[in-house]
Image 1 (tube, one colour):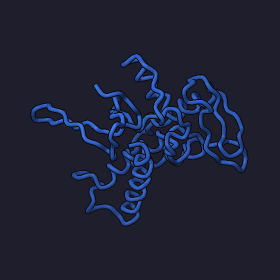
Image 2 (spheres, one colour; image 1 turned 90 degrees about the vertical axis):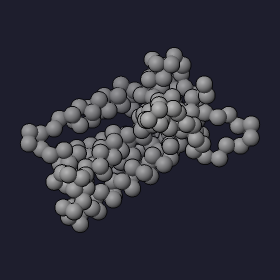
Image 3 (cartoon, one colour; image 1 turned 120 degrees about the horizontal axis):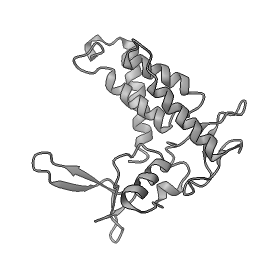
Image 4 (cartoon, helix red, strand yellow; image 1 turned 135 degrees about the vertical axis):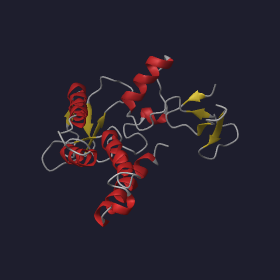
Length: 205
């Protein structure tokens, strides 16, 4: 079995017909370089969630280059929005390999305790689950993204997940928002959220 890395240089493809697997390179691999694969299927998940999953399922603590980097290779998937007035910088864990470490703003260096950061994420997840009666899924996602923008950075994993789902909803075949029924602003919105998702995920996949 290949070693795991959250920034692996290969990807595994499953053949649904005969359940065979094929491992392909995602980047150029130099002679003598270690070949790695990602054991999880949650590349969008932030470091703390990936490391918890790897610890519970495979019994090791990942220390790959992505897990060691507070910005997660520049993707900022863990990032919260700084609450200091007129700042709005990215708040990231000081030491992502320490699950109890404080967080700090990369712009103004203000601090946030681990418990405060986790509470912010939990509140955001709860809001995502609170769909209003009669509210369409698209309206719910758009409302939630707007409501969370003062708390989560645009490239936070929860925001990216919402945008990824929106990209699928806008123009989905067979529904009221299928491509032929979309207004020009809706088509532009689909393009916008898809571009934002690709930009973030392109840094970690």
